[in-house]
Picture (cartoon, rainbow, N blue to C red):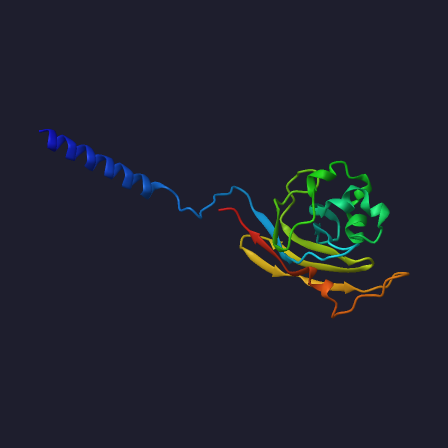
Amino acid sequence: MRKTALILIIFSAAMLLLLGCAAAPAANTVERDSDIVTVTFDFEKQSGYATNQFAVWIEDANGNFVNTLYATKFTANGGYEKRPDSIRVWVERSGLANMKDVDAITGATPKTGALRYTWDLTDATGARVPDGTYRFFVEGTLRWKNKVLFFGEIALDDSAASVEATADYTYAETDDQPALTAESPENAMIGNVRASYIPAY
């Protein structure tokens, strides 16, 4: 009798364990209740002064600023006044001088590697933006006046999408520094910029 009861207990425990495993979601399944856009790129940290500054932001199809996803802390926390060429496009378009909560979108310069920034489809006030086409930007200060601006458009609709950005490089000399060229190693600071729209599931 005791053997039968023990066998039944072991069998019941095994069945409960199996049922629990079958009911559990897969480890790589993440449920979200809202759409997102991710902006990804490869970052190679540069040595030396006046480099490694970048910003990631969104504008609408008419060129109106929508939201900042990330900006390096040095520039956003006043460095743009000391070094006015640092991510200058973002500083101008974001209205940084009037931005109240700068710390919410800033961080230290990251280490070399693949970076990922997420947009939850809200504007700078936290309101959900309407569906439509939006522009994504990644601006990087390569060294002094030398910079790169990556940009592309992505549509918020019913299907997932992935778009590669176009790069626009600007090379310029300073009083004591020559301009970079297309062969300069600093061009590797930011590359492979892509935005992906991921609908909720």
